[in-house]
Image (cartoon, rainbow, N blue to C red; front, top):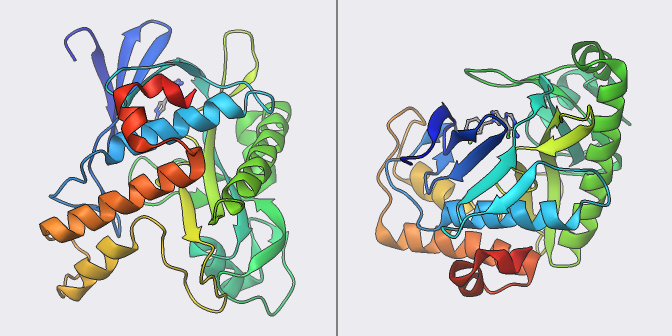
Length: 285
Ligand code: Q0Z
């Protein structure tokens, strides 16, 4: 990236500044499981995630404005407007999974939302709930109440971001369900643009920022298999790996099987053949 300044790294993404008002988000082919980045890459995983983000940005502009500026021809890099980020992540949950299930079991509530008794793991909630979290620089994000999020963001910006997050989630759930994918939960980030407007940022509605489950075989009462990562998780645990770094190298058949699941998610959700995206990424817009 000779003409860009590196400004940040995530576990599987890199962030560059192109000029004072524009950033470049680059999705790599790195994959993490059980919070460990594996030594083996999944070819095109970054392109799948960037293409999916761009797809959702292009189709949800009627719900809320977003930071998207352009897709680069490499298919994995997205130019975006630099925003003043809100200091919380906005998680929307439609099903009881992950830390939501853990919190419900311990307290009967998630992020201050009191839920009916007797719900099972992975069960659909009566209504989607918003469970904001602080952004930890290291370790796990911490779920906070909506009142705490409103104090951190300002009441009006928080209310706008939360309403947008719920509307985005409902839109994506309906789109995905019609294509055989359950969107159990997802995490959004918002910022404030130069005009003071709450704006959707970061990646959106990708398998790395969401739980995608195959609708086929959905059965509450147990954890559901991840649409994209289940093959990697099962194989890694099958080696006897203790979930500490470094993770195991993946054999070629596990790499190929996992790549195929990411590409399948892309094609089901976008209805664009992945080869067409690779040839000309703008077909997704
Ligand atoms: C996103 C992140 C990544 C490391 C900052 N439009 C924006 N304006 C200002 N800041 C951001 C954005 Cl998207 C922003 N992150 C998350 C992404 C690598 C961290 F690729 N941090």
